[in-house]
Image 1 (cartoon, one colour):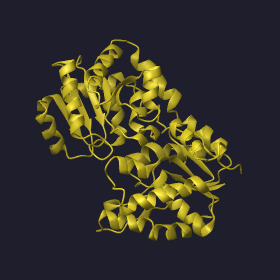
Image 2 (tube, one colour):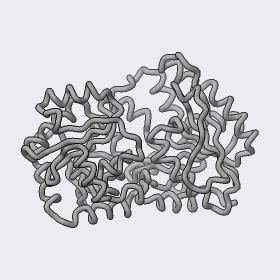
Image 3 (cartoon, one colour):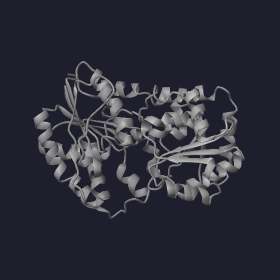
Image 4 (cartoon, one colour):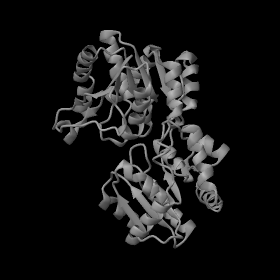
Length: 401
């Protein structure tokens, strides 16, 4: 079995590292897989760079051939090129590689796989299948008349009709797809997998990082990993940080790991009352994130609410749980909000009901008083975010060699 694995992000993108590379390892280990080609989409500096695939495990079956975006173009032109030039390049790749099918990660990559299918009838599967067009619309990133929204939504309908299999990340979305008429035997839920070994809590490392950051050993430390804006809260997140400082008192400290401008983030933190020494802000490589989580007491997952958010599976929530951290999470996010309410592992808030915010922080305070809370919460990641879920889904859904 020869598989072309198609991602929509660059090789060094955090989403590629955290969600695609672990699945490549599963395919590498399958005896019925003879070859896998990873195809990423490279933009900016990496589009011109010589890229080397370094996986950290035996990968003799895996090759790498990126699609490279042309430099110096605006985002609209890049998106047009994604779905005009890249399908033709992919058609050449699948012929040269002799792929038996495409395994696409995410609905935008699934759109490319569908466009290849139109020309070749090559079967395709889409994992991490979500209503991406609706995400972008409801988050205000795209408008209803935006060509990107119109095309992506159309292509998602085609994926539902024509993909040999869909692997949504939330059971909520699997049930929705069945209601829409997609055959149940073509759908398997696979929440975004987490590397449980890499994110295991390391108390020694966590203590060392607190010392390096100048944070007291007994401080309550919140951590936020991710962007501000788009599908995530921006100013609202800073207000939540301020509330955390009020609820936990003078000993509260904050770690922010973000690609956003450090100067901008620090200015916004200062505007809500944080002293410079009480916060640490950086853009951390994914490999460094577990150490910062080990130094934290709880985590923020400040995702904007929207109807389609019930169908997502934030990778950061799984990583927080794998580190044993309680999560402050927006109500209505994927299956995770329901899991927290039914099994613990954090607290839920809804900004449209302001009283839920202090109540959520009080719930976190109760959780933190349990000396075994990190062990208990890690169990959520083991049950719901293990890469074994993907292994089982591949065995169930992918063709047998």
